Length: 474
Ligand code: MG
Image 1 (cartoon, protein in one colour):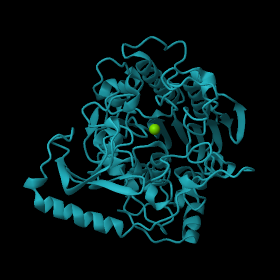
Image 2 (cartoon, rainbow, N blue to C red):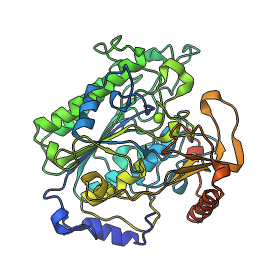
Image 3 (cartoon, helix red, strand yellow):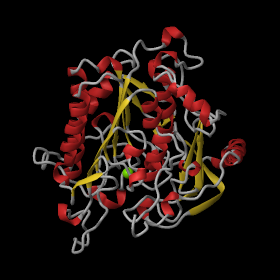
Image 4 (cartoon, rainbow, N blue to C red):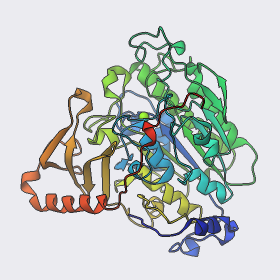
């Protein structure tokens, strides 16, 4: 774990330096990129580990993501930091577990339109870190870290925002179908579409949302700029309700879910195509992933975690291991498969290092730079992953071992079960978590229990942002 001790003034001083003077200790001059790279993060919503052609789906066609994997690296043990939207996205943006900044709750899993909370000004987002070092940035798509003005992307380091600020199944209209998520009509979901801080459409025509996000993203890439850029393209799909544009409807053997994933795949092709056309491919890192596992309770309208157990909401592997691809022609070896453990938490320090900057070290970060791993210069640095649901630490992984103290199988509903003795799986040999081997490895259990105590000592309770109600006049 990266625990650093800078104060805020040090941070501002560090990020205020001219770009050329910014250095990362330990990164030799010869290894430094000539030009500061651009960054693109493409984030799908509720996409499962088994939903892409290149991750083994037999009928969903994803030629652009398959090509991206062929030209870049597949990360096969990459975890989100939570199994539901808001905490997962907060972790991506800050490089910190949501338990550290109040972006999780045991009462409400995510932020809702009636929430008054959001990401705190004291947090440093990837966009703020990059903006202060001279990057231009845009957020296109689902934000879900607070919809009040002070929480929106343009108040948190982004120069531009276009998107639905929370989940596309919210703001349910009166008279909507009882099963609106699986019998969707645009008018059932009164979700706003925003440009910067202004609502420009309501309800959002979700039939064209993937297409319009893509157009915005491509426009931003093609816009002439003097600075390096950061684009965060967070699709609202394939989170239910599922909407595809005319060109993609009824095209997939997997039904509407397959149509929607294929449209997201088309979008990836447009983004990578724009980078190639602009001559930016060799200077841009693109990472594709998903915020959490598939929402299995929606059956055919939810995705598949492939060989992994359970899905969204769960701390079984299917809830948090995500289909992830990293692409940077000339820097990331084409066709590589990275099996080292990695996480969305690691994206923040990776971008910090590639951008040649430093961050405020007055707080605990939970990420490890993936620079060496992605460029082939070394191995992964992550050895431990913590699996939280809300504020409850339910499982821990160390090396190949994963120990569950609490489980809840979301697909089957039911209750949270406490395990004493805990369950133990070797998730490298048994990624489906079928064979509990706790009885054979009491030493591993003891070691993992100690790791939990060490970790808990680093966590200070903070009030939950997800439990703050919206005031009437806000
Ligand atoms: Mg999600």
